[in-house]
Amino acid sequence: MEALKDKIERLKRERNAVILAHYYTEGEVQDVADFVGDSLALSQRAATTDAEVILFAGVHFMGETAKILSPQKTVLMPDMAAGCSLADSCRAEDFAAFIAAHPGHTVISYVNTTAEVKALTDIVCTSSNAVQIVESLPKDEPVIFGPDRNLGNYIRNITGRENMLIWDGACHVHEEFSLEKILELKKEYPQAKVLTHPECKRPIVLVSDYVGSTAGLLKFAVQDTSTDTYIVVTEPGVLHQMRKAAPEKTFIPAPPMDSTCGCNNCSFMKLVTLRKMADALERMAPEIVVPEQTRVRAERSIRRMLEISQKLGLV
Ligand code: 13P
Ligand code: SF4
Image (tube, rainbow, N blue to C red; front, side, top):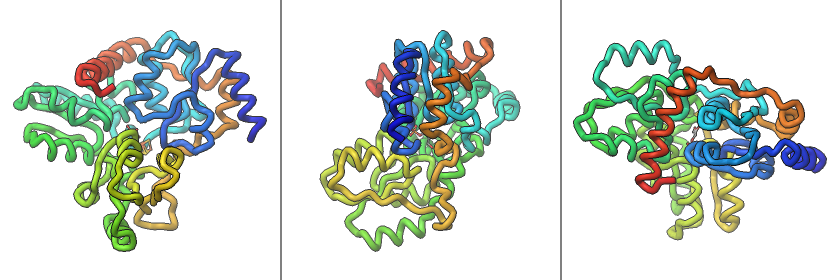
């Protein structure tokens, strides 16, 4: 393990590389990264880094977003098979047909989408800024929101927008959490606060004390002084930073419906290992490639998100 870490450090310097990692990766992966963040902060970093190489310890759409924003840089993935069930639930050709069937709508897509879907989109959003992005549009502007139905419903309930068409996609990890199990945990730990990612289903959102992106959950968990126990309803990788930042507090990962399946873990994020990271830096492969025509259109929708977020002081 130490030898692998040294190798990554050395190759990083030789390649002038930066390592960006998402909160859902393994703790040891997060610990060798230069920056760990949620999707919004990671795309911001990818847009501004002056390193020549980005090694993206995350899933494919995140590496793609980095490449779209920094086309002159080499973006490496530790494992190209690290996909995303939510991005997979929205194929570009199906989404294009949906948009064509509903003309006159502004298309807002969650960052968990392929470059091709982003290229069909007017404004990208992440779970950090989705509500504010939607609210930045006039109240009567019709919106298509994709691909996450749970995040879409969450936004619709908060903003009270009726004219919002929502794509019927979901994340297999966040769909697995069980309300019943969370209520049982609440009985066991009555003082605990429930912190939930908005990709979870509405009944779980309704019993939560705080709903937000991974970065939002982390910030809340660290800053909150009302209790010292938290039930965390998202992929448990984020507990690594929570425990580091607030070792005196207790963080309980919410279990999935079937407690034996381990399916509250994102199997895609867990494909990222130190060995694969070292190999990618050594071989300078596998590398993300986005066709230029798609990239240019996708960049427009991501830049709109970054501009709105900057204007609102969210990044
Ligand atoms: P965040 O944008 O909150 O980091 O979430 C990304 C993700 O994949 C959630 O499943
Ligand atoms: Fe995709 Fe779900 Fe994994 Fe997030 S947790 S990367 S939405 S499959």
